[in-house]
Image 1 (cartoon, rainbow, N blue to C red):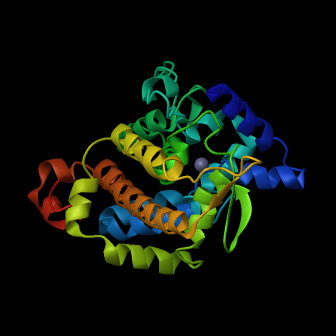
Image 2 (image 1 turned 180 degrees about the vertical axis):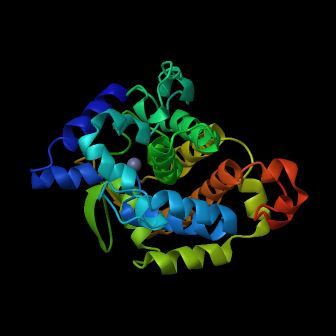
Length: 314
Ligand SMILES: [Zn+2]
């Protein structure tokens, strides 16, 4: 199914002139633009002043014209970039199968980057977990070229969000929920994947700044300390567990035609799961950026610990 899903996304990415397919394509992006912007805004809140200045100046060099260059807009950049760079389509997810939980198989055995190849030029068959690791290393490396540094930042802003969408860290032989049709009171019928990308995000509000502020207000220092631990692989497996228990585990019995009519309890729970995952993604994205761009200060200066939003865990 991994190959089929990748092929599916590849085909859709190339079908930009067919309106129905454009709609279907957005289903495969993991979080719509709204969710990614919220993640970017939450991350921005937790950046140190120095790192925020670096992030802003790196993003200001983006002349791709695909998005505006503020951090929220740039968090959506990789989805736009994929339209003309279909070799990056598989990097947006990891199809860990619900039936076996084998994340290493879903990551195509973790291919290593070919010699002298930047992460942005890596092999097409790789997963979001590996790409987050690769781009994090590049962002941290002082020898990375300015062009690659920008790409590394743009991909990280997006992929850390993607891996927190449970259906981009799992698959149930249904192309990450793209084969399941759902309906719920007050929400237009659509694919289960799209419900998790956008419909449940929209339940939190339609103004991304307000949604981000509301989520930030609920994030405790204890949660920040917990969330920043472990690795992107662990974060993906955490999202996978949510897919198992909440996305698929709480589905009602389908109707005679195989469609799921989601009760209000499912929608309520899904919205709170989405709120949690957007919050985690933003806090963890900030951690990655602070660590990567906090330039030696974290390692050599006690002062950096005092100013860290992560309470000295750097
Ligand atoms: Zn994506």
